[in-house]
Length: 211
Image 1 (cartoon, rainbow, N blue to C red):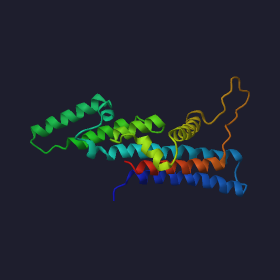
Image 2: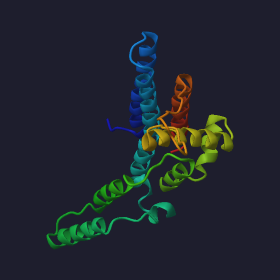
Image 3: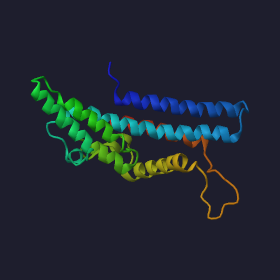
């Protein structure tokens, strides 16, 4: 059976929860240092957000066959590398010259896959953009309905989680100080990490209802 977007998300979230489980188990057994346990929780947050990002990439790619005859504007505006366009053109010319069967959409999809690796689909606006690429209109309105949350609640929670993820991934979760005399790390709440992973899972399942 083919690997579905939800399978990719589930795999990432399972691994994220495994990091959180390990940190909590170490804390109960008084193993490792607090920093090691908290770094496992930081890895859980980063991988949880990666679940959402990887899921949205997979959704867009899987929707290509359904929307290729009339791609949405957001997908039409996506800029591809000239090298990919040249490869597609040369392949088409070669297939015509040899009178062999051409499958241009296979190569177009691969070009799109490479292009999407340069995009991130983690924030509220980025997810809206990816849903539009997949041909989903008013995506957030439908998602909020499934989650029984307001648009502001979803936007604020997602923004907070992404901010924490970016602090971890890009800054090592180090506290920003004007004139630091020592390195201090941001506090991380074990129970909040669990709640955020469950929230991301619920969000992904809500998106999966509409794509």
